[in-house]
Amino acid sequence: MTIITVSSKFQVVIPREIRERARLTPGQKIQAFLVEGRIELVPVEHTRATRGFLRGIDTDVPREPERK
Image (cartoon, rainbow, N blue to C red; front, side, top):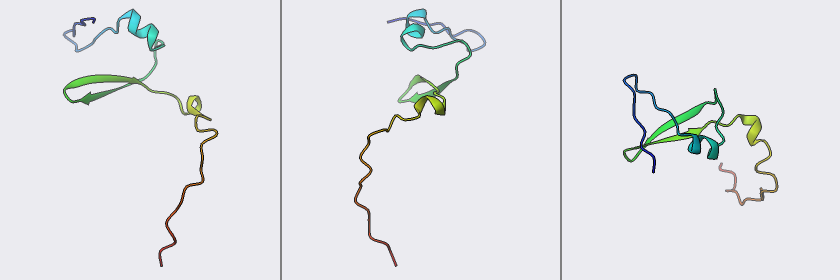
């Protein structure tokens, strides 16, 4: 566990080990979420990076009949 200090400007430094494991790069965007009293940081992926991630998914899903 790593303890991080919040600066007077409410800035924090993400420790090197976490940055490397999350493969963060300088200038990368991160979303912050407040979840049950804790802050979660999630890297934002470009749409192009997610292209093809559903390849091979079964799209044959039963649908409701048309409503009149």
